[in-house]
Image 1: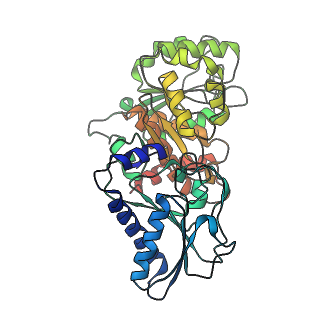
Image 2: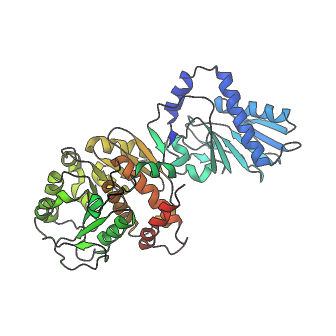
Image 3: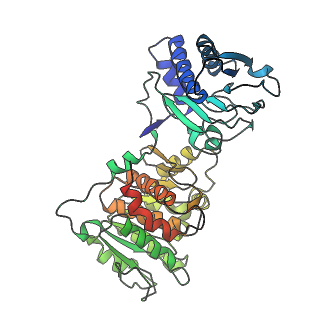
Length: 449
């Protein structure tokens, strides 16, 4: 996991550092010089323009300019508040105007065709949320120090920061409670199959669907199998005949009181997935609430089940004895929390997790997973190929499979989101549908680094 610190947390780490301030500045400037040298492809005779602000970010930039000049680079430094609208012609512009603690509006000058290297974060991008104020430069790379900042991976931040280089300057970031997920994390979090495994050891029961909405639970079923479930039962209340995957077992449920047959036979399963296409009737609502109250095993709650829970979610879910994973998009989050997630998605997910006692997987370009203990995991493995109908149902099936395999709930949700994104990247850039993402899951798993 790659640590992520908010600007306030990073400031506290800086204050607690045993090294003098000038030592940290020299290390940071050295990291900027190394990144600049790589972008320049050589340094002697190159021209670099540095835009330096009045704070620590500017200190890093000014010292980097001195170090580059000592190596034969022709450097020009402009104060951030006294720049020309168009910078002089150069081979590289270094944006050291304002860092992650900046609040306000900043228009970066025209770099005149030169690539831009940002120091810590592109100036004008909020270090906490990734929101943009003014006109930041589109950097080709950003050198950030000690830990990632939320603004580099949330909101519009990724659009402006280019390749992010994380430089170790000797600061202790063990206080981090937020992390960016990597391939290696997924491998570590999801238990491998045992030699004596059998299908029931990783069994999932998918409960969802309603007239006209049979595709959603079917997609979750396919994904659960593709992500490692050994047995998947599919039940659509009121629909005895479902065009289900050949490998699944279809067990009919009544429309009313469907919780009763589930709870009578749930002991053989390791996880439930409830909600994709389930419908929003009064009978469904009552059965769902009784099911969640009585099911003593991990449950993934998605789709219509989230809508039915609404603002009652904290009272219902906090009473459960087994883990719950909620997988809302923004509209479903607002239904649960009473307000949209807003710009600070980490804080929003953490608040809902704390109030419900559940793991919250808040979907988005950067998926944000928060556990009830305050741990926050960020996933950026996918792209716009996931913006198509049914991919959320695929994600539900993957989360359920990883829970059934024995992964800890917060890690199961984060690992599922990461693999889900990796699977999308193995699909065509245009025309990908949810079934393609589900089919790509085994190959994506095989190619995790």
